[in-house]
Image (tube, rainbow, N blue to C red; front, side, top):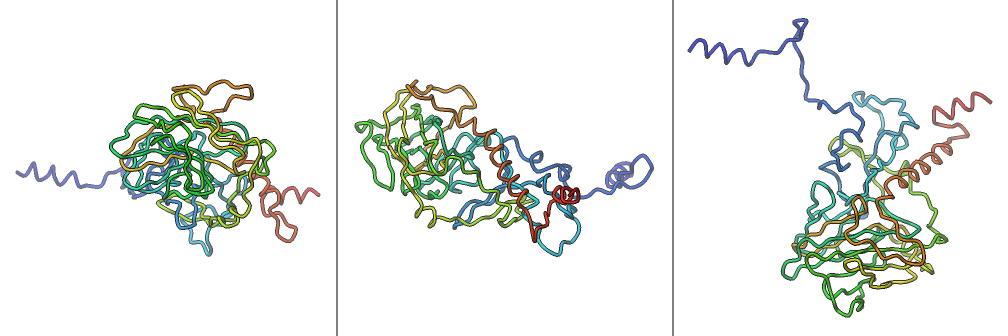
Length: 354
């Protein structure tokens, strides 16, 4: 009994290091000192995160090495909030289904390429968007039980995620039931009422003009948005500008949305679509389940060759989006002045040389 008692007592003793001193352990995670991008799971998104809703949008942020914080020690008490300019949007290099730009009731697998519906019709968007050129992705219908349904297509960021894509002016879609296509909540026949079944692959192509007003517009830097902390990660919080976006919608000639069934083009479903920034979008009703391929793996059915340029896979937007975001942030930093004095350390050094 005494031996067991001593053994039990010994297990509760403080561990000592090589110098004989107590090893004071804290609750801080071993990875807390790593940059945010290194602390994330492989899919690039925190497991707990804020959702876009009620007119607010959230983007994961990380410290911007080009605009250093003058007081980077988070353990010190700050008289004011961290200035958002010292952070930048964290651009994930691989297009996936967004964990936060979606309806909460949808269930996304860990690989962020499979999504399962729940009850009502609702939407998830991809993480990367397109403004110009010809792009393609495909969706495999894994499960389509009972009276469930699937809609896939393209939507701008202001399209409602608590409704199916195509229910407003910001989206274009095709529905598995009867192959009907939707825009502004109006459906029209497109496939002679031939829909899609379990095992079918829906190809989604969008063609956007190189001369459209938004074609060469850089993304927002968000450095003047609100910076918030949620579950040990920082996010940019910004307000939607839906009213302004609706008022500025303009049709663009030679733009279109085309759908494919198992590799065969069904022809243009919509032509002269509204100008803007479009994301891949998937809407599910009840227990429907699909997987999406943005081009990271070989196509199940490659799009048909046409006279003009073949569509690019959304996968390519991973790298190009990083370049565009870096350019937007760089222009912000160059123009970062107050009363003629540059606020960046680099700017101060440049001024001292003149």
